[in-house]
Amino acid sequence: MSHPAASPHEADDAVLDDVVASLLRVEAAISALEAERFRQLARAHAVAAGRSVHRPRSVQEREIALRSIAAEVGVALRWHDRTAQRRITEAGALIEDFPTTVTALEEAKITARHAEVIREVGAPLLEPESRHEFERRVLTRAERDTVAGTRAFARTVAEELKPRSMTERHDDAVDRRRVWVDDDIDGMAQLGVIDSATKIRAMFDRLTRQARAARRVADASGGDVGVTDTRSIDQTRADLLCDLVLGGRPVIDPTHAHLPGGLGAIRAEVSVVIPVLTAVGASERGAMLDGCTPVDADTARHLLAEAPGWERLLTDPVTGVVLGLDRYRPTPAMRRFVRLRDVHCRFPGCRQPARRCEIDHNLDHAKGGRTTLCNLACLCKRHHVLKTETPWTSAQQSDGSIMWTGPLGRRTTDPPEGRVAFAPDPDPPPF
Image (tube, rainbow, N blue to C red; front, top):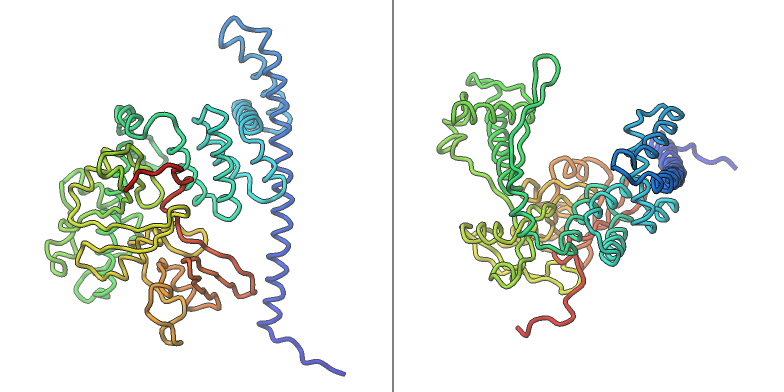
């Protein structure tokens, strides 16, 4: 009995299914090997530590053993000896301070980059109990999230567990603000800035808004009115920054006839979530900027005082998932709710801020999808197009989680961001 031949599309799907399955096996093998490399480098670190005990006279002499071992490893692996020394030291810290992370890597539950994030962000936590709690919470997130998502969550957990408040540490960090220049090649150079996260993100947001406004005018004109612009968004941001610093305003403003006030009228926008006790001055717990950057309490309260409007979020006391919203700004309540709930694009792994995303129906409106909160989500342009133009589908659950199904039938769930990243207070205030 003959069977109909598979269509080219089905044949391609079979190949892609095998590709993904093979990559999963490869990644699992790589993770196990990465864990073994960490363990062997940590053994080298232990040997160096043992030998340095016999050289207690100076810091340089105590490092001699490690330098020698690093040179030995570097020559064997064709690494620079400084690179070998750094990796040996980091491996020693990872194995000693975060052993469960190495086990998770060995079992292919996370990648080496996840492990490095846990070590790097958790390094300032000196108390063993704090490190253990940090590792436990962040590993749970790392097993289902990207490296970028894990890093953002890890920073939040670390801020809560550090013995000094965010406000105290920010006061010290402010003294490190600076601007510097690094020469590049071909007559180029790099300008670097360290300052408050709210200022830096606001600067970047304003440059992005201005660049996109210029791009929209150029695209809409099609060159009919002499407005042509072939620059990328990065190039446009760089040109605008130079214009603003050197001349105080954009040298060329294609939007002046299209936008009231032109590019100069565009202002930055940031989204800050402030715990209510921080807002009223009863706590120094920090806030979160754009869902990924901690902000000290004083800065958060200043932003709150200067904001033209604000929203009160009602969240689940354990998961932190947004349950409701009291609106205080005259904007469409549903859009505000969805953006505040989602924080960023809801495609797995994407961190594009919600304010730069489009509001999308999980089940398309044209297919009967209702315009309700449980059928709306933030998607950046890239992933909105992906969902619209390819077989990717999404279905939102009652808790705000979104189940994504790819063309090959594989499913992954993107849970909503929790506004509470830590265990609830066992003895909350009586109000």
